Length: 131
Image (cartoon, rainbow, N blue to C red; front, side, top):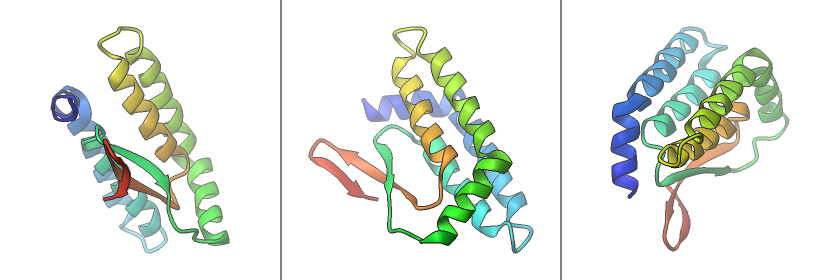
């Protein structure tokens, strides 16, 4: 099921979403100050490309700098990405067929809101393990 979901997600818009995050990451990496934010954008691109079978989890704590970067991310563009994914998820959940895709949009929204300190992990039938 994960493979079919990923293929449908990829074909029906995941490629464009991932490409947008990747281009945004490249633009942010043009400055030294933007590199940490660009890396988070690449993380979003990876999850937006193949969301089925993966989830996000809290990684090792980065301390107060992680919180500062998350607040900057949230204020500058995290809230807008978060709201966009929530709206997309709600629209997708209107139909029964769209519910699995809506859930993936909600999953991406959590990473878009507070990306620093979160890692993408692979899910399996036996639990969650680090990718």
